[in-house]
Length: 437
Length: 98
Ligand SMILES: Cc1cc2nc3c(=O)[nH]c(=O)nc-3n(C[C@H](O)[C@H](O)[C@H](O)COP(=O)(O)OP(=O)(O)OC[C@H]3O[C@@H](n4cnc5c(N)ncnc54)[C@H](O)[C@@H]3O)c2cc1C
Ligand code: SF4
Ligand code: SF4
Image (cartoon, rainbow over all chains, first blue to last red; front, side):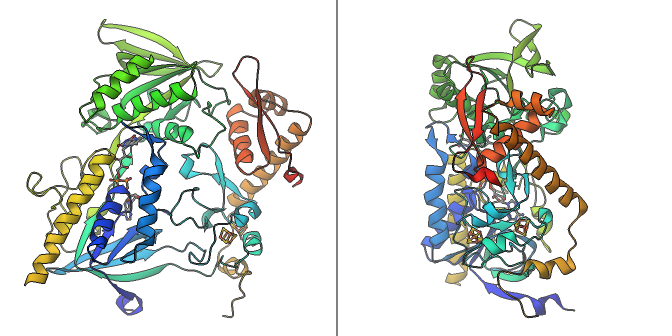
C-alpha cells in the first residue's frame, strides 16, 4: 500500500525538530516575522532540559520563571504548531526550499484540546511506576501530567504500564481519555528545517568504579537539579538511600567528559558552572552542610563566571584539585572517595554522606539518519557539523537545514538561545532567497 | 466500531493484553502502600524506622514513601533530634483510607 496515500499532508514554512530552549527560540523568532512553523518534539512537553532545572548560573534566576513564559508564548503563538510525543522518521530534500518529512505522532490517549489538567485521572490510577521526569527518584502514575509546568499541561497515558482498568476514564470530567487513539503519520511539507535536537546526558554506569546505581547515595547532577527545584521529588534535599538530610556532599567534576576511556575526549562546558551553582544553592538550603568539589580544572570563562566561582569560594565551598579513582560505600550509606590530590601528588581518602556526579553533555545520536537523500554531516564527536562555523554558525552540510543549540556541541543556556537566534536569522535569509527569485 | 466515550479501555483490552509484569508490579505497589500506611497509622516514623520495622530496604521505603507523599497520602512531620531524619505521618485529610 502506498504510505503517502494514507498520510495527511501539512504545509509549513519551517519544520523545527526539537522543542528545547534552542528550538523554541528559533521557532518564536521565525513565527514573529510571519513564517508558519511546526515544532516536532519527541517528549510529552516542550522545554527540553532547561524546563527541569532548578536555578540557572550565573544569575541564579529560577529556571522555571524564565522557561514558563517562553514556553507559553510558543504554545499560544498563532504561527506555531507544536506536536509533542512526535518525531520525524524521514526528511527528504525534494529541491531548493522543498523539504518533505514523514512525522510520527504517537498516541497520547488523551484529547489534548479537551483535557483541563485537573489531575483526577492521576488520582484514580492505581498504577505507580518510576517517574522519568524526576530522573528515577520517585514514582508517578500511569495516567499522569508529565510535570507541573509541562507544556502542554495535559495528561498522558503510559500505555506500557497501564492495566487498562478504565479508572482514569471514569474519573475524567470532560471524557477526554481515549484508548482508541492510534499512531498517526503526517507528510509535512516545509521550505526549511531547523535541527535543535539537543544533547544527551552521560550515563555514569559506564564508569562502574563510581558506583552509580550500586550505591544509593551516589546521584547525578540532573537528579540534584530535581532535588533543588521547586517541584522537587522529596520534601527537601535528602539522600535517596535512606532519607537522611546530607551534611557533607561531594561533587565529582568531569564525569564522562575529557575522558578518552569512555569515548568522550571533550569538555562539556557546563558541568563546572552548574556544579558551582548547585553548591551555592545547597549552602542556601542546607546551611550546615559542607560541600567539596573535586575538579581537574575549573573552566569559568563566560561573562560573570569567574566572579560566580569566587563567590562560591567565599561562601565556603571547598575546591580540591583531585582525580577521583574509586568510590566505596560504608554500612551507614556514607561514601569513601579515593582520589589523587594533584597538587600534593599523593593518594588520599575522604568520607562524604552524598556524592554528585557532574555528568557530561553527549550528542543525541540519530538525527542524521533521518535525512533521506542528502547527508547531514557530523563532527568528529558526533554533534551536527557546522560547515561554516565562523561566518554562518547555523549552516549545516545541507542547504536549507540549520542547526540550533547543543545539537551542534556542548553549550549553556545563553549560548543555546543565541544559537537559536542565529539559526532563525539564517533560515530567514534562506527563505528570503526564494521569495526574491 | 461504535465507541462509547469514557469507556474506551475495553476496546484496547481486546487487542492489547496486559503483560504479567505490569499486573505483578501493581500488586507489589498496592501491598507496599498498605504496609507503609498501616505502619504510619501507629505513629510518625522515619525512613530507617520504617525499613527496620517492615524488613524492607531503606532505599525502597524512601522511594515508595516519597511517592505516597506526592500522591497525597502522607505528609512531612518534624525532623529528629540530630537534624538527620524527618518523621512522616498519615495526611490528615482522610485520604489514607484507600
Ligand atoms: C545538570 C545540568 C545543569 C545545567 N544547568 C545550567 C545552568 O544553570 N545554566 C545554563 O546556562 N545551562 C545549564 N545547563 C545546560 C542547559 O541544560 C543546556 O544549555 C540547554 O538545555 C540546551 O538546550 P537545547 O535546546 O540545545 O537542548 P535540549 O534541552 O536537550 O532540548 C532538545 C530537545 O529536542 C528534543 N529532541 C531530541 N531529538 C529529537 C528528535 N529526533 N525528534 C524530536 N525531538 C527531539 C528533546 O526531547 C529535547 O526536548 C545544565 C545542564 C545540565 C545537564
Ligand atoms: S486505565 Fe491505565 S492509566 Fe487509566 S487508571 Fe487504569 S491503569 Fe491507570
Ligand atoms: S485527562 Fe481528564 S481527568 Fe485527566 S487531567 Fe485531563 S481532564 Fe483531568
